[in-house]
Image 1 (tube, one colour):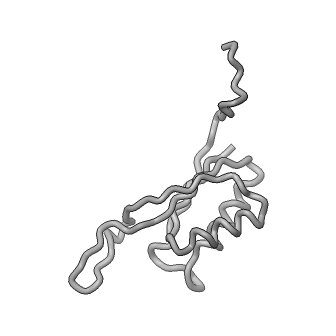
Image 2: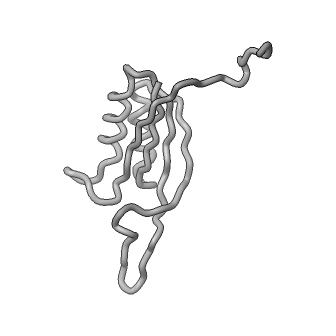
Image 3: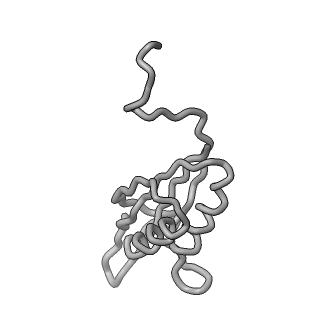
Length: 108
């Protein structure tokens, strides 16, 4: 299994979620976050915004679903034809174990 964590623009979160749902990936956790990438924020006029609002999606998928999920997020989150700075980031990490709390055996 793999954990997929994606940081995307707030205005793209519904596009990403809808694209995942359309491909059959309905289980996800969505969190409002703020932060910045290597560009260290954005300057608009005299104001420097050091942290930007973003949305984080967290999912755990099977190995054979990893590429489809990453590709779907990538395509749905990208702005413009080739993407732009601040479009986000996708992290993929192995998951060694997972448990459903309501079904965990009590005899350990």
